[in-house]
Length: 255
Image (cartoon, rainbow, N blue to C red; front, side):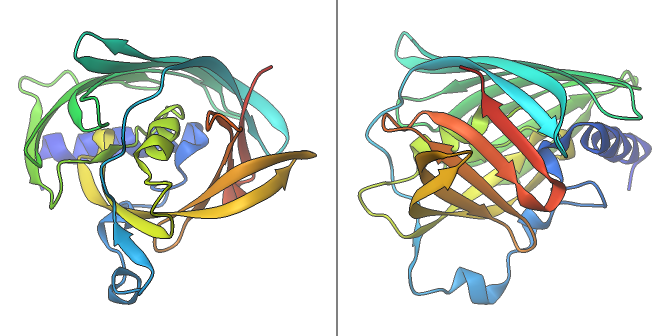
């Protein structure tokens, strides 16, 4: 493994350790890249189908860890000509850790297919990166201040790739829009975690009406081989709440 790649991995783990979204990778490489064969062959599992359209949204999330507020994120998902833009900015202070700041700007086709992504993140270290998507291919560049950025190319079975940044949560709202609600059942999405340059797959499944904090929501279960995330959406299917039970993390839209 090159020194640049090692640095990229260390940078990613630092951010993840401070900013919860993604207990996906705190202890090593993401498990999204290694779904079990049994899960891939489940009878009710479907390949994600194109959704009808994106839906605009704007808001602010409060981020809590084990009951303690650690930060917030402001975001906006809006049309931009023939494409869509999803922008987010997150700040957090983890208990016993330092400040974390992150931004992301994702350009999407009208059906939710990613076109281009730009991100920045800063804690102990500062980094930035870009990913260009075309026909199921992704070209990633991570800049950690070295002479040259770390470059990597990926190929996916479908161009409808879910981009899930280590530090931004509004991207789960996009994932909920990618889900084919009419088809239902368990659907598989290719996924890319930009900071890790790590591809893989996740499953998303509707679990019907669920109660959270005394409110009834439409819920989705997002699963990898060893992590479960619950998404709670209102009647307009806006993302209102994200729960990561294993890490006692809750991301909730502020009223």
